Structure formats: structure tokens, C-alpha cells
Length: 291
Image 1 (cartoon, helix red, strand yellow):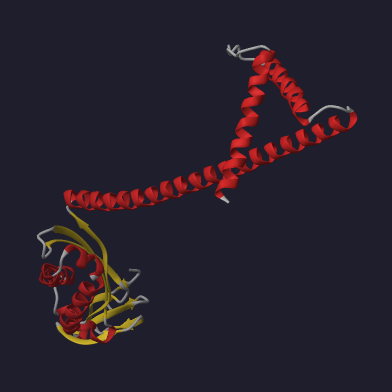
Image 2: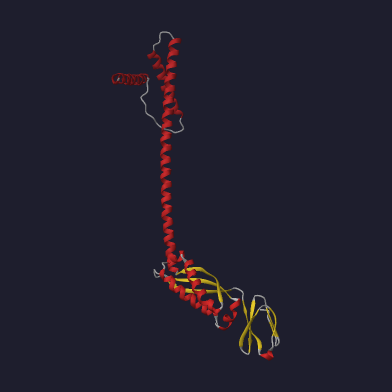
């Protein structure tokens, strides 16, 4: 520790305290610095103690209330009290073993009262109980307990695996709930979009038919005014024949070779026109009867 000894004087380093004996009996404590001794009178420097903080790591195996064996890693930080360094020098042969024994005793008395989950949540309470016991015991021997840390709690490997499986199952369950909600929202949005699409498609078809109706009406009126002696029925027949031939042309120009069988001939065109007029007249008659 950087301390020098000789027959007539001794040097005590910083953060240390020396124990001076006279004729084998404790006489005084030597603070850091150079000290002179009278060996002829029986004075000598019996030993030097460090006042720095020391660390002691203790591994304890114990059992919880729910019969789970765990390994607890405890770190104890202690130091010699300068004023009571003579007690620390003379009273204890091996302070580390003494501290370890008390830690084992307190931990094995506290942990069996807790379940595994409670132990993880209240490990500071275990450390506090160990600190209180060590301060009471080790203080009488000239040692001060600075800190006690429960560094780690390690259950058996099979228990850790079971805990991880439980946690994974809970997370999978939660993920399934969120996934189901997402699919539900997707289906609802899809149905709403489909309904809106059908509505807009219906509006478009209605506008298309209205435009066709307005165009036919305008053509009939223009033709009747420009060609004298023609009736609306004759104009309608002409338009129906024109649209009939346009339809046949469109079917022939399509890229898909689809075969369509239709009755063809002027008479059949007239029959189609009569069927349309009869349908319109029946609809108008039904509307009048309802009113």
C-alpha cells in the first residue's frame, strides 16, 4: 500500500490508518504520515488498515415461497471506520467471511416469504433488510456498511423458459386481437367503398340514360320540324333501326370473338321497337293507376 517500515519510524499512507502497540498492547491509532517509535520502550507499528471502500460479491442460492430456486447476486460495499480501526484490527480475523455469513442468513430468512414475482418487485426490500442487519452487527467490529446492491436474480433455466413462454403467449394473444380489429376495419372500409362505388355507378348509368333520352327527344323534334309529314312514331322507328345497326357493328368490331345469335330483318326491328313502346306505355299506365 506504499507504506514503509523500519525499526525507529514508520510511514502510514493516505486513506490508511496504523495500529501502534506498546509491549504487545494496543496504544494508539496512527494517522497518515511519518511516525517515530521507541523500540527500546516496546513501541512498534503492529499493522495498517485501509479505509477505502471495499466490495464483496456474494452469490446465494435460495428458494421462494412458490418453491422456485433462484440464484441471487449481492454486492456489499463496506469500509473500516477510522475512529474504531482498533476494533476492526483486533476483533475480526476475516471480515469478508463474517459479512458473507450474515448475508446468507438474512437473505435465506427473507426470500422464502415472497413469491418469485414479489421477489423481483421487492428486491430493494431484501437489500434493506440485509443492510440493517449488517450495520447492527458489523458496526460493533469497526466496520461501516456503505451500500448493498441486489445485482441480479436468476431463476432456474426451466423457470425462465416457462416465464418467457407465458409472456410470448400473452403478446401473441394481444397481437391476434389487434390483427382481428385491423381486419374488421379493412372489411368495413372495403364494404363502404364498394357501396359508394355502386352508388356512383348507378348515378352514372342514370345520367347516361337521361342523356340518351334527351338526345332522342331532341333528334325526334328536329327531324319532325325539318321533314314535314313525318310522325314521331316514324322517326322513332328510324332511330331504332339506326341504333340496331350500330349495335351489330360494335359487336363485329369487338376484340373478343363472341358469337351472338339475333333475329335479323326489318320486321324484327319493327317488333323490337313495338316491344319498347309497349313497355313504356305499360309503365306510364301503371304510374297513372297508382296515383
